[in-house]
Length: 303
Image 1: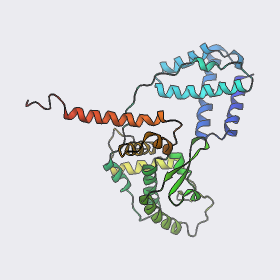
Image 2: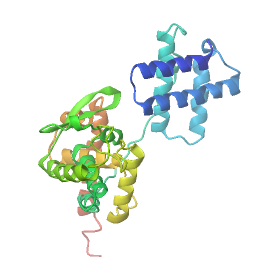
Image 3: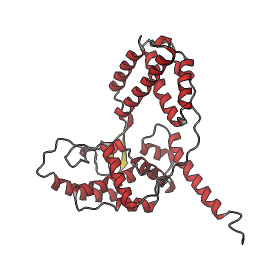
Image 4: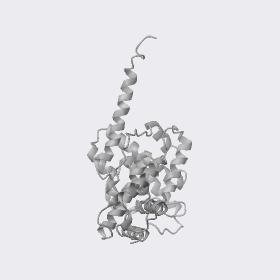
């Protein structure tokens, strides 16, 4: 079977399994680039011709281009999924991508916002207009729930419950996050301004957070809200001002405040606690660095 025909089938299968649009796009594009490489380098067009050495050669080229280990592993995950599909459909007897090893990832310190930066970012918006109140609430939801960018965009009016917010996560997995008194207060003010703003405008969408024209927010729009907040709050240059960094802040704050890793993992919608442990490791490293400054040999000498 032609490899690119199989890839088209794989994309359709991903859509039927209701994977996120972002995941489907990543899987398709990464595998398409891999197959194009195999055509150009080895003249391979058929699925049956693809062997482990061919795939290893492709990943070796990616490494040579300076691709990070974590990014390379993300590509390998999609390639393995594609060939797994080919095996399940009977196009291949074995998955050749399983012979390609995961790249060893170095430990990365997760650098996130300080409490003061979060206060300045949320304080960058007020309740004078609908859009300003909406932006203030977007930031508050990100910092107080740890929801992903796309998850915040997907919150519907019916997802706002008495004490929780229903989050539609990756892989169509639902989870609940607490609706804190602070968020409730901001939501009441936002809902009042939203009602006034759209009083004479037809609403065709049930999303809780809407654009100026009443359409669902895009992930790019949320990124822009963080950019605007950064311009006013003057966040450190070493911190990437984004919804995902707000998720890091949420995780580290909860761990510092005593929440166990397993509970945090469920709140974040992680597949397993190994991902969540990265946040704990970063906190431990920060604490060690802080203690090292206090116990520095030369700092305690009268030089």
